[in-house]
Image 1 (cartoon, rainbow, N blue to C red):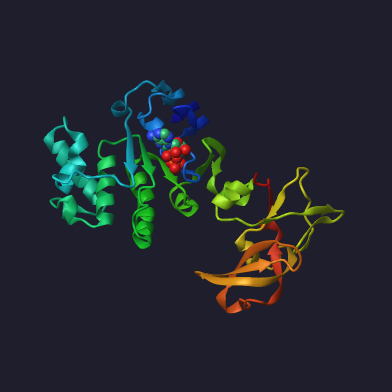
Image 2 (cartoon, rainbow, N blue to C red):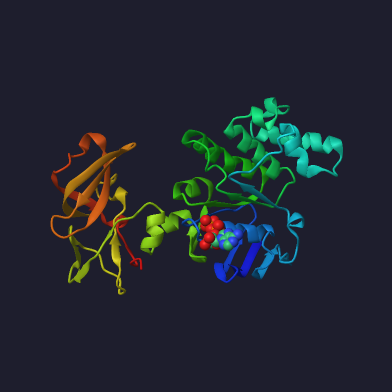
Length: 341
Ligand code: ADP
């Protein structure tokens, strides 16, 4: 188990990572998400042992590794622009970190990693004879070769096209499980985070603002900042009434929390699979409509005032732009979030 305690790091006088605390269990897959510049890569570099000037402690299985050099930590690192050695074959690239081991052991390990990433037929190729996706597979195999106990991945597939990225995102968790290695996966893309990880940690301006299971964060993001990162950018002001709350779109029979906040309206709020699920009716006008496969996403604007939310529905049911609509919204998908300041 990796444990970070009160980790703090500043470039010159500017803090990049502020008082971070978290743990990663054996074989756990944790995603770190946050906007560009919030400190994700710096945090990974600290864990890898590449930023020795930080404050706080890092331990692994109870052993303090804060002062341990990077190469002794058994922590692998893979970046987006992970360069392979151009003058070495695929097999030699993968085996590079194994020098010192018996030759037969190296050959067997490289062979099993080539099988793992589906490239046994390319062992003798050179990096410039590979596609972008094949290069990333080789880079991953190379990171896994020395059997790290933890693999740090910093947007490893960001430069690949969408279909290739999706395929690797599907395969990576299987590889990690087969190798029994824990992973921290850094991304600014919440969908990627969900594909890879069961748990998520959200950073903002150097600080961890939220951590927990992926589903918990989705169902109750608690702040507009976290909701927006998770693809739910629309919330609306409300006022409490004796029967619940009132908004620019209509009344909702749910109790408002004591603190001042906003009502979060995720785009799946109209996905009513169970006819018994309680709904409210929201009134507005369709001001935009676009395909977000497999759904049609409608932008609904309030009839008075200036509020908007998105509403996904099957394409064949979607009204055209300009239609005034009354739409059912599921009460169980509405939550309250702190306003973003
Ligand atoms: P992220 O990975 O979330 O995009 P980074 O960890 O790369 O964020 O950067 C965090 C902050 O530290 C940013 O404000 C960035 O400008 C700053 N920073 C990163 N690297 C350096 C550096 N080598 N020197 C000075 N500031 C840096």
